[in-house]
Length: 267
Image (cartoon, rainbow, N blue to C red):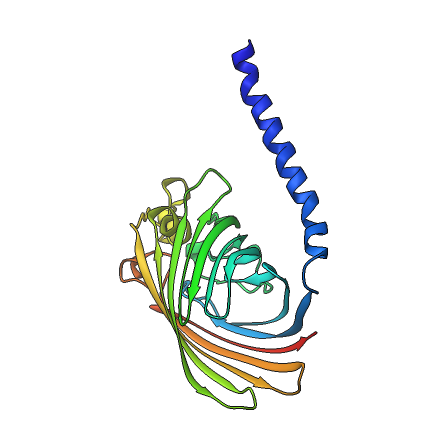
């Protein structure tokens, strides 16, 4: 009987320690540097890879808050991150957030969907809760994000190179970012695959179970300051889908394209 009680006692101790840590965070942050905020809004236009998916344009909010090692706000899929090491040229961090890259994403701000019959009765993947660890060194960055919910093991590793193309003393900047995203088998099957219980041959949706693959992405980003506290951010990017993933019955495009424009106020 005592052996059966040990796991629950251990869990109780762990939960108590975690609760104490979380309760101590506000007071620890309050003693740190003042909060810095970035808030704004803009528009994003996307042409996704799904069959007969029309281009979608929607309004989006933007918010980032930082205090010492802590960052809050949606950034690289993280809603919150903590930097173990941070200086001008190096950052080592861990984060937690969400990932929702499948068809008919729950977190999408647009209700526009494809009218292709292949999606009739299709069970879209749920939003993933993720934990991540990452590093940035000068122009290089790498991040590994792991799914935490639903007892799954979907993983994505992003390796990125940021190249400054032009910079002016006024603060105007133009950058190119090249990214390779390795996705394990659990992730590719979740987003692009069709499980046996999700197939429907009458609408052209056979079973499709891809292996691990790599997608490549290229972004152009621009930063244009309008005042000391207001900046205009723009980006345009294209993601090349791996050859095998292009064979998915859900897909009819080789690449996705998106563009974004944001007006941000810093305070």
